[in-house]
Image (cartoon, rainbow, N blue to C red; front, side, top):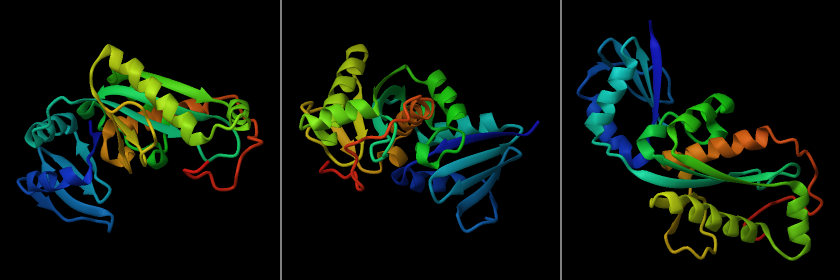
Length: 232
């Protein structure tokens, strides 16, 4: 019975991926957003411009493992951190950290590019070692802002605590999606567009979005501004 497997790769990895696919039987692309197609073991392999790799066929799982092996991808533990809801007018802002092996969560990507959040959250929950999430409801955001604290401060302090908790269990590289914030931890790295480049950040994005989607907090942020930027 045909099955489908999905992997996601960042731009730095696509060169090697194209080299591997060139070793397989070539197949014509069918859409402008497809970068390359190939066939292997009765499966059709499609590489999209976004870095998504789709493998369809009865032996999809086997072909997936073969590609991962050929890529030379070794276990790499990462604490990926991302947030959702920062710029929204209502509801909570959720900041999540996930501790996982990069290769184990390549099936997911940035929540903004994911339709079935609940399904992908189940994958992350199964594959990760653990996670820490902090939910800041609208009333708490207003309370903090009225005391002179801005969103950058709230996010930075939360990131520090999440990194501290997960690092207690296992030392791992800490990578946060987005532009740098003023944090105390020297080991905390920021990566713009990280949710597309580092799978564990994408996994954190999925968990955060799932929590926000299921939150009962629909309150309006009284201190909300039209453009929630890095200065707020």
